[in-house]
Length: 309
Image 1 (tube, helix red, strand yellow):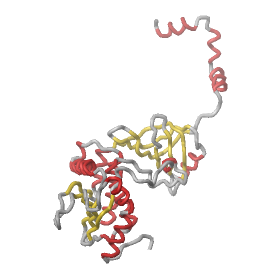
Image 2 (cartoon, rainbow, N blue to C red):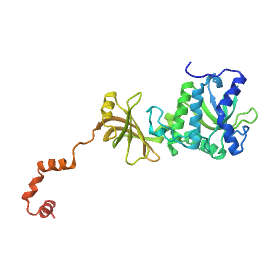
Image 3 (cartoon, rainbow, N blue to C red):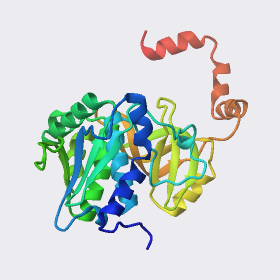
Image 4 (spheres, rainbow, N blue to C red):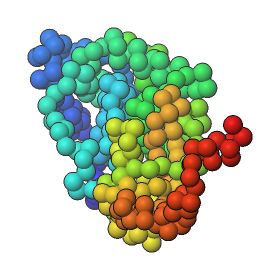
């Protein structure tokens, strides 16, 4: 079995809470919050879904997406596994001021009670996200919000559930829904969040490779690397010969509508860097007819006459 699954006993569910709440005790000491403080509930709703049917790896991805949504942080490109990926440098495993913490699991449903040191802002942001999902065309989408919704939608699609973010339970009663993400949510908002179109980019090729044909490009006017899909393996191999060189690539770009930052790029062709020195370029211009100016006594007057001045 490649993924850990949970048994149905309350004892093992308690063990799960203990494992996933390792960070909670440290955060609680620093913020003087106790495990009884629940700020919101993440609940999976679908036929036959229970906590023990959700693999640990999937639960971790779900909570990570909620975490990034709450703190509005970007994630590394998950599908490009370069061993020395630049975006992995400097990452810290220490507690952050906005780390969410799992404090309780309901055995009767896949419901996970969450605590946040920044309770008010976290719940407000989740509520704004819920409103934006209901009115995608009228909302200004940030990159962390869109990517978080994308990953939660993928989980919802895989397990045929909807993911509800609710206010805390009142006794046995469910709290009100703050936000709801279904298998179709990401597709529904993508058209409002992104702009698509054909374009050409000039930048430095940083890396080429991965399980599929991919590359990363550094643009002169954008601090974050652009992760690109390459049309085919043959094109990727040719692109790999231009590592750390400036190239002009052509293809379809995906821009974030809010700030026109390029999020994705599909490379269909590219132009390799020009070779040769400036001195050689001047010689070529001379051979192409540049020496004809020697026969003109007054170049300035000649040009003025051509312009009709």
